[in-house]
Length: 307
Image (tube, rainbow, N blue to C red):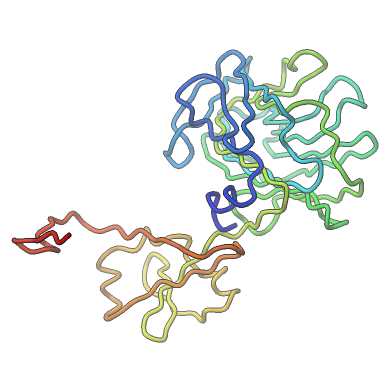
């Protein structure tokens, strides 16, 4: 999927990062706002970066001032951590639980058996993508919910943690999603009030919304050493051929795990080769971690600055 920065800059329709210092949440792309009801709190974000929003599972939720999710093909990506299991919890939705006519839209739910359900409902069609793998407490999950209206079969899909194999999938024939109400995060709405039993207890971060299908595959890296292409599996260097299939299967998501002494095992010049399915990708950057050093180690005892 390239990465979120690339995808959001090119294709993003909404991004709710929860990184505001206080007050309402903002969609930093579309400019929509979300009102905090009963003050869900900001906590340390996914991967230790920025802020996430924590919900208490009893009375906290967020109401956005727009439906935000597209009416046709869409991708919704978010990070989620559950702080309670064994009951129904609505994570987000654009539907209403009042009547059959108003129960239209899309929503993501944790079921009583701790599995996920991704749902798309129109006035005539209901499609539930029901998973089987159980979620765990206090563990971050990277969720991708996709509706691909260019396909007729297996066009509603839910992925977990960058797996290329869907967590669950289903088929919906009806084109066009009718969102009954503006996006609600943290509960299911019913008529004029939230539903008492379905509050979400957990943390949410980095909600990305697109009007297209976003690839699941992150940028992949191999190290070119002489005429060989290599990856490090955490123990030693392995060689492969630089085909698209091998980049996807063996390529490294980053180079953070490679230590300095392991780099030195590759004598001479080395290059980093990157594969990406982001069509506009022109540049890349990498970060190499090194032990602490003094400027003199690189510049000598009498460095000069030349202007």
